[in-house]
Image (tube, rainbow, N blue to C red):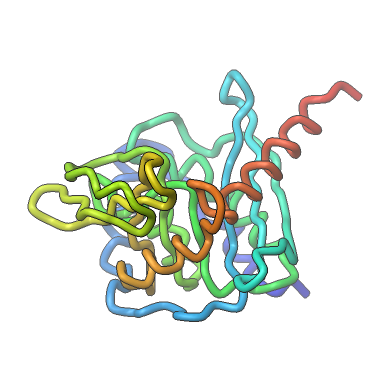
Length: 234
């Protein structure tokens, strides 16, 4: 049996219109747990990423599970298919969610933490991909974005570990975190069952050598390889 053991995840309804998608976000947003501290010493951490073909008509979703101590990949899964929703800013989760859930369901190891290549609370409706995945799966989740979706911030100082608040509409929705000395920062936000302090700690633990977390790097390679295989002629 799959460690994830939740076939209903694959049956999550995909909204038919933008209005329906926004309504789903508004309905699920109150379910986000902002008080859960999350695992301070997770044993395993999963990275989630999606790659698209040039036309945006085919995608490959990948999940890699890393040993949190060694950062070695201990499990992985992919799902290739079509985007489930149109290309609408703020609603990207609906394009990717079915494929990501299918990949998660194929894992044999249940991760302690999900790290999404995207955002959580740092979203126009405070319900980005990390929030959506966290609520649907019940797992602690955080978002680590390469670029911001919303908000304003001051540049953190140049040393690794420095951060500044990411603010939007008067709310602190995340942190702008420097993971390498003198290298442009990443954008960290809470998804579900995780504090912002702990999310920051986890991201720094996952970036011993590079700007992006090892979870993101391994998932990115896996989904790109899966997409390339899917595009090869028979």
